[in-house]
Amino acid sequence: GNKGVITGTSSVDGIVGSFNETNITMSNISNIYSATIHGFNATKKVKYKIFANDSDGFVATSDTRTYIADGTQPSFGTATLNPVTPTSLDDVNISIDVFDNVGILNVDLLFSTDGISFNRTSTTRSGDKYSGVIPAINTAIDVFFKFEAADVSGNVVNSSAERFFVGLVDLTVTDITF
Image (cartoon, rainbow, N blue to C red; front, side, top):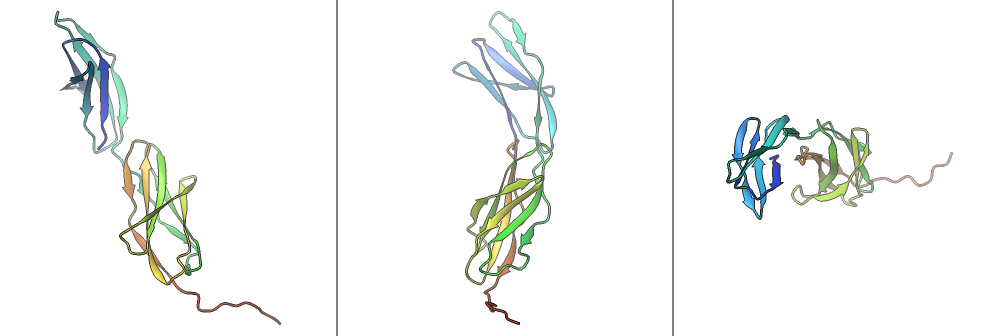
């Protein structure tokens, strides 16, 4: 899940972090105080501040800070193949629209001939459309594919696995005369 880490350096007795009005105790490792704000299941604005106290009872409070906790994974449109009916001799370009509420970091195309072990290839982007190429397989076989998308918040998700069949070329026309 998503997490935010609060850190600060101090030689004080203790530090408490507060996010969205919930106090969390911060741990001290070599005078680096940290706490984890656990993930959220939806995109949410998180406010936090840090309270530090010393042995004399003085308390210092940071300014309130905010960040966006993104609990929304990227989503996918419908994949399209080019050529629509590929043969075993064709490189196949597969495109899909990918959407996200905060922005896409990366999209890869994964493909396989057994549906278990997938090869990974990069995609190119044009607007919301990402396209990757599966090289010619050179045999009649089912080809499985899916896309993996990562957003800028670190959410990673795969599209549903799909498949298409590449057939052998039964007929080749080499010379036409009239």
